[in-house]
Length: 370
Image 1 (cartoon, rainbow, N blue to C red):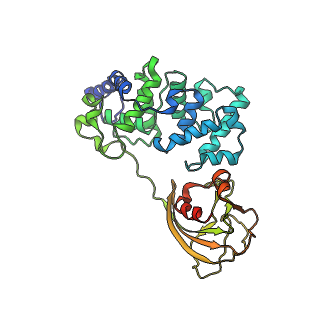
Image 2: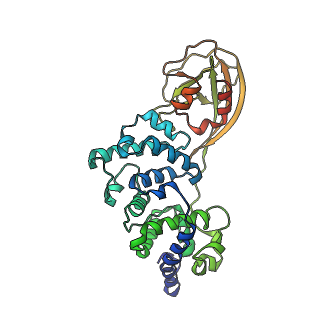
Image 3: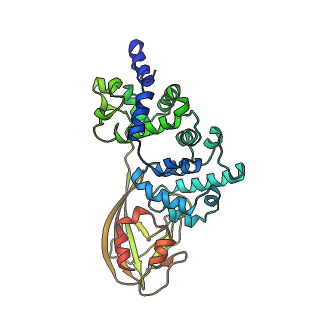
């Protein structure tokens, strides 16, 4: 029984709702499944790469990246051996770059511990870097046909509505309860299809933002939240902490059709990526230009002499931080840069140096000056 507010007959209705789900859900899926490239050849490697890319990212945004990534790194061994800068360039724009680093770390674990062959045991899959319960379940069920649940946000939303469960879905005990409930009704010979059907139902019908499309849902006739009129109240989630806002100044420094880049520290936000030099706002534009490296005990660097003008404002939202940025162009009078910085031309910016999408608002200005 999922809902702590239900008992007796109501509890039985909740259990029955899940028991009734597999047949109509699979029939719906066979007619409405999304056509996705990783479904055409669902090897463990393909499913793994797709699931990592899809974490906190929309399917539409992932499609092109997935194709390019597999074209460049078609095997686990090639991913394990890929130079970090090339890997980051392939990932550029997807965000949450620690996902790419964990992919490579896991690929190296597969090479070192499993002879380069993707593990087929759930526990060994779960032990890979960056792989949680959901991702391990997705790989094991979709690629290997194992009867293992794969419970993500879509599944939690569908089940909370189907069973009228008002517990907080962000709590581990709620996810554990839903996982066990799914395990009990999971079709042994169609586990992968069932898991993907739940994902698709949540993504296309039982919508996360806005009114769910109940008239299209194969579970409408036995959905408890629909019957009680609670669809818009579910799922229940604890409020997220407010983001910290940082005002930042970004310097777009140009010289002879090249732009200055510096590399971020190896730890922390956007670790190891290249960026347009930036710093916390404050001090006033009238002060001498003092471009500092990351705010971690880095030595001050000399000003970059040259004409300065305001370029644009931009904003980027991370999980816990919001950057509000003002960018200025600097037409550098010479080629000298602080240690560790580089000049990048248009080709190098496109092919070599991974610049995060946090600076996307200024890309058109950079392109115009290269």
